[in-house]
Image 1 (cartoon, rainbow, N blue to C red):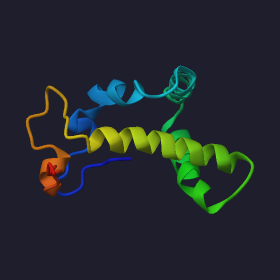
Image 2: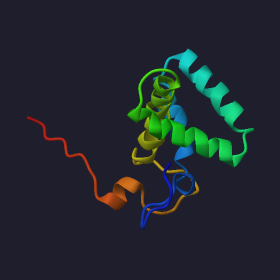
Image 3: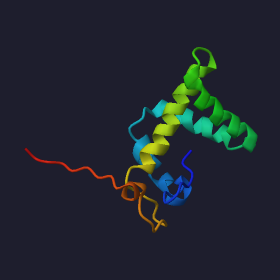
Image 4: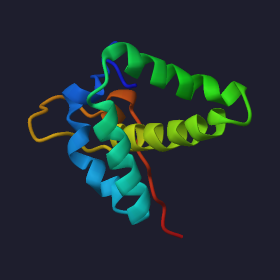
Length: 113
């Protein structure tokens, strides 16, 4: 979901997975348990099932009802975790390059009034 793209490192190379607990700490406990169960099940699936699953999440925004609603919620939740940690400015302890935020030149300047 966050592959290497030009100068931007992939999610796994960047080591952002080390900061997932920072984001997950704000989620309801039951949601984290459900996500853990889903990811555990998906970890045993062959690549074609994972590809179908990601495609179903992406396609869910074009449909309503049935499983599309569930896949849409999963899409928002999983992408939120991935993109939230990727663009957090934090990288893994073994990553030596610039963070994605540094590479895109993003910074927040707070001005006191």
